[in-house]
Every structure is written in structure tokens, then in C-alpha cells.
Amino acid sequence: MRAPRSARDLVATAVLLAAALVACEDAAPLIAPMKPPPPACPAIDDFLHTVAIGRTSARMLGADVAGDVAYGAAGPDGLLLFDISDPARVSPVATVPIADARAVDADGAIASVAAGDGGLVLVDVSNPAGAFVVGTASFPGCAVAVAVAGARAYVANDAIGLVIVDISNPAAPAVLGIDNTPGQAAAVAVEEPVAYVADQLAGLRVVNVSDPAHPFAVKTVPLPGVARGVAAHAGLVAVAARDAGLHIVDATVPAFAHAVGSLATPLNALSAAFVDNTVFVAEGTGGLDVVDVSDPTLPRRVQRIGGTVITWHVSADGDRVAIADDQGGVRVMDAAIPASPAADRVLTTSDVRSVTTWGDLLVVSDAPFGVRVFDPSARAEVGSLALNGEVTDAVVVDSVAYVVAGHAVRIVDLHDPAAPVLTGTVPSSSSVDAVTVLGQLAYLLSSDGFLVERRVDGSGIPRSYSASDAYFPSLMIADPYVYLPDRRGNVWLVIRASMRLANIAPVGGSAERVEVRAEDGPFGPGSVTRTYVTISGLANGQAGVEAYDFTNIFFPSLLFTVPCLGNAVDAAFSDTHMLIAEGDDGFEVFARNSDGTARPVGYFPEPAFRAAALGERFAVAAGTSGLVLVDPAACFSAR
Image (cartoon, rainbow, N blue to C red; front, side, top):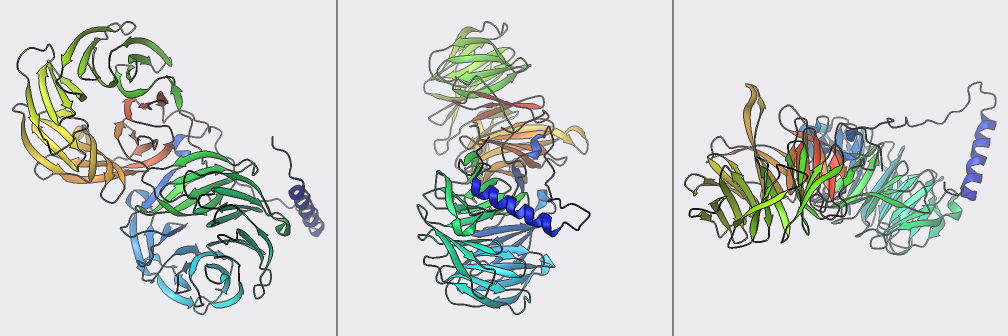
């Protein structure tokens, strides 16, 4: 339990006593509104996850969300509005021409836009599809951020400081007052009668705005670094200070505001937003940090989302946060329970590179050791076998494991899982990256670009297919073709019987893995065949899984894309869920819709390099974090 903060507690007590005296003649007691507690046993989709993404090719500088509309300030591309009422089909509904949209705060029927040299631009969004500029307030300098409180807009102007604008009549906004800050105002947060200005090198400026015509500073809090972003909640102020990280300021008594805690962030802290006692920090190419400040003297990171999410700005609306993603548009996340659900870590002393299912068991490639057989129900290893060479992949066929270990594929008999036995080797002339087996034939992918077919027993003459201008990280056989994903943005289809090329199909980006799945469709079970391609980098900077119809291999059609937060390297499927492994960026679980599309329901920070589904559960090869088990249907509790 944290120690009480005397100043804050005394003031809070005084406020409560004053309120009680004012209301003493009232029969009904004053009851502060309370947020309902989270479910006692939250499900996976109660935790931090993406609700909707408004995609655009424009660079997003600022974002906000209100109701069923997400807003993006896109610099010279203006203000963009997205309808997020159907998260699976987010669509842009309007673009409002604004010469330099830097930031946006939507409140009711009006969206206030900080428009650089254009001052403050007010947009009527009562009909989002017909949004239009209704009024403009001009003033010297450059409007870079805005916060709205009631009928006033507070504008951070990097040249002249804090500008307070009356927006009660949106058609004729009027400047009420200016506080000329000593630094360059970069952001503003408001808890009237106080405004907090991130004043860059001058630190945090605390401004009394009770008389908007004559605002005045009551305190300046010097801080390390450059105060770039600011957020406030119940007297606590979070300041994003670029390479100096996140600082927490206690401003319960504004005149005595002082720094009480800090947290180093991996990269530049640019913006901050509060959701209850959690601060979300945008870090540009560093992604998003999620920080618990329930004890403001000891801020604690509970989550970090990196990968392809490039966050310039973050804002909050209730339990939702809106993120300006430089390459992905506007991302809206549910932040009611900000920490990920607890994953079940096992084999944590290993270096798990791959995992595959075998009946009710899991076969794990442990890089420095060999092969391990694991029973997920008992959470126990049931057998193992040490092998020479670095073990990186394995496939199991008819109780036999074919294990990639250096320049060879080791054949391991698993008929007695408690005592695996090495029975042979499939040789290779070069290092092997991946293997699969069909009957008595083994198909090897070598690091020099060869697909080699040879008999498991080593007899006969091997056949091969070479593609020196491609790099194949994996392979899948779905007769009559061998599917070869190419990190140069293609999927190659090789006819297995003849080992000749059938087609090269372009996909959305760097392809890592391919899975061809027969799924239920309108004509019954297995009536739809989808080809899922895991993409580590799409052309627009995003990543995820693309689903294709390869019925006509010469003209495959893209069915849908499931985007993810990091660089997708593998995917696993159950009947109701999908898991995308994102390497060092963690992994996400998605609920699958009836049409095959999917919506994110949980994010996990554990590394994830390969994944496998066992019924409705998932197993994740998490490198040196070992083997991670996740059951989307289980009862989770926060970390």
C-alpha cells in the first residue's frame, strides 16, 4: 500500500467538507459518480485491444474519437473523419480541407482543429458525412495543439504561448486571452480553472484561467528534457518529455505543483493521455507505452506496443484511446483494462524456436538442446531428446518428428513420447531453413534458395527447384502445389509432381508463411478454401494476415486483410479465434467472424516467433521466454 500524500489528502478532505456544508440542507447525500468495476473474471476481449482502424495514406499528426466517429488531423491533407460504428468495415466519411491540420479535439457537434498558421478552425460535425468549416479564429504564431473545455478552446501556440478562444458561437470564435509562455507551447491540457502547458525547454507551466481574459501563471515546474505532450486527471499531470521520458507532476494544489515521479521510455515521449490511473504515451517509432500511475511516485509500465505502430499523438475519450499512427491512420483502442491477460508461461529456461501439435501434445524445438515433448493439459514436459546442431523447426507426421538441426533434418521416433529416439537423418548440402514431409518424401528449403525433394530414407536422386532471386522463409504443400512465400512480396506456386513453376502471385508485402485452409462456407463444412499469407511488412507500412482465393492460381483475389500491431511472422487458427505471432513485438488474439474476417480481442507483450493451435487453445514459441500457452475461453485475470 502506498504512503498517503499529505498535501493532496488535506486538500481533498477540505473539498469534501466544503461540499458537505453546502449540501447540508439537501436530504440526498452527495455521491461521486463511480465507474462500474470490471468483471470479476474478465474474458480475453475485455483487455486492451484495437477497436477500429481508420486507414489512410495521409500522415497522421493528431487523433481523437467521439461516439462512432474517429478524427484524424493529417497536416496538409486536412481533417479526416471515419465511421467506426462497424469496426470490421471502417470507412472514411468525410475529408475537410484544412491547410495544416496539426491536432483535433472533437466535442459534441464541433471539432476544434489546431491549424498551424491558420489558427483555430472549427468544424461542424453534427452530420459527419457533411462536415464543414463553420468558423476560424486567427492569431499570430502557429497553433499546434488544442484542448476543449465547455465553451472554450485552449490552443497551444508555439510562438505566443497559450491562447484561449470563446467557441460558444462557432461561426464567430473570439480570442479571450493569451498567456505568453517563456518557452514554445507544444501541448495543453485543461482542468478548469487550471490549464497545463507543455512549454518545451521551459518545462510545465501551470496557468490560472478562471478569468480567461487575464490568464496568469501560478507555477512553472522545471523538468528534464523537452516538455512535448501533456495530460491531466484529478490533479495529476503527465508530461511527455521526449528523450527524458514520462514525468508525473502532482498539481492538486496548483501553486505548489511539483514533480513526484518519472519513467524512462524506450524512445522519444511525444504525447500523453489519461484513462483513469493509466497513462498512454506516444513515442513515435517506439510505439505506445502503457503506464500505471496509481502510485504517481512510482510509475510502472504494464504494457508496451511497438512494431509497426508509429505514434505521434494519443488522446482519450472515456475508456477509449485514439492514436495518430503515422503509417496506419487513426487507431482506436479499448483501454478499460489496460494490462494484457495473463499468459501461461512454461519451459521458461528454454529457447523455443518452433512449436507444432501432435495429438494432444506439443512438440517443441529448443534451439540449444533439441526436441521436447510437452503435455499442455498437465503443464509438464513428458519427454525430450538432445540433438547436435541448433534446432530451429520441426514437423510431425505419423508419430515421427522431422527436426531441422543445422545442415540436416533429424528423424525422431515419438511413438513413446516419454523416450524419443533418433532413428536417422535426411542429409542436406546446405543449411536447412524449413522442412515438411508428405508420405516418404521430405521437402527442404535451403538457405541458398533451393526447394529440394528427397526420400526420407535417403534413397533415390533428389529433385530441386531453384529461385535465386527470391528468399523463401517457409513452405506449405497443398496438392498439387508447393506454396513458397517470398520476402520480396510474392507467393510462388511450384507444381509438386514436376517441380516446375506454375505462377508467381504478388501479395501485399514481405511474405513469411502460407496456410491453405478448407473452411465452412455457404455450401457446408469445408466448402470454402482460403489461402492465408502472413505478411511482415505491407506496402503501407502495416503488417498482418491477408486471405486470398487461389481457385484461379493465375488471378488470385484478395478477400480481406487482418492487420496487426507488429511485424507478423506466423499465424495459427482455431474454429473461433486466430493468433498472429509478431516476433519481438508480441502477439495478438483475434475473434474470427462468420465471413472469415477477424477482430482483435487481446494483445500480449511476450515474444512470439511461431504459433500452433490445439483445439481452442494456442501455444506460442517465445524464444528465450520459453513456451507460452493461451486459452481465449479461459478466465483471465490482469497481471
